[in-house]
Length: 263
Image (cartoon, rainbow, N blue to C red):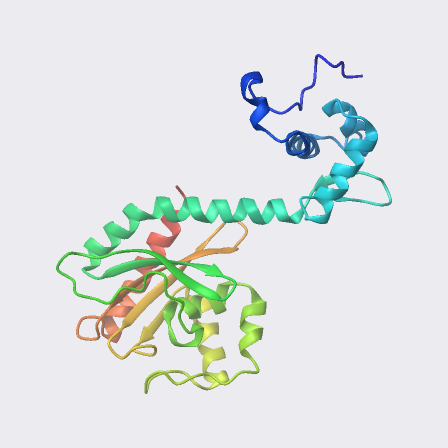
C-alpha cells in the first residue's frame, strides 16, 4: 500500500507553484505516467489508483476520460490499462519536428555540395508540405516552403506514394491526374510503374512535371521500422538538372536521407 506521504506518481510540481495548476490535470498526468510504467499486474484501475494515491472512483473517472481521447486504452477482458494510440501519434509528431530541426545542417551541406536547393518535406493530412530548405546565395529559385504539391507530379510526391501510407496512394486511384506540364504522368498505369521503380531503387526523379523549370530528386527518410518520416529533395532548373545528373544525384540524396535517422 502506498502511504499518503509516498506517492511515486504524484505530479512533479513545486509546492509554491501548485496553485497555478489544475488538480484534475495533475492527477491525469500522474495516472498516465503510472500506466506507462506499470507491469501487467499493476495496470488495473485499482492498482493504478493505489500507485497514484487516488481513490478508485476518481481514478476510474479520469482513466475513462483519457480513454475517450485515445490517451489510454483498456482491455475489457483483463481490466488492464495501457498507453493509447493518441500518445503514439503525439510522440511521432514530436519525433518528426525534432528531425526537421536537426536536418538544417544536412540541408546546407547538401546544397553546398550540389549547388542546388535542398529541401525537406513532411507528410501531412493533405499530402506533403515543405518545411525547410537551404540554397546558396548564388541560386535564384522559387521557394517551396509551406507549399503542398501534387503527389503524381513531383519527386517528393512519388516518394510518398512509394513509401508512405498506402491509403494515400489508394486515394488517387479513382481520381483523374491533373496535367501540370507536358511531361506530367496522367496515366495511372504509368504512375504505378514509376512508383514501383522508386520503391525498387530508393529515390524518385521529376523532370519538369509540376513546373517546367523545376527538376528534382527525392529520397525517403525512414525510421527503423520503415515508416516514412520525411522526404529529402534537391531541386534546380532543367539547365543544370538534366536527366543524367538527376540519376547521379539520386544516391547522394539517399545518403543524406539515411544520415538524418542516424542523428
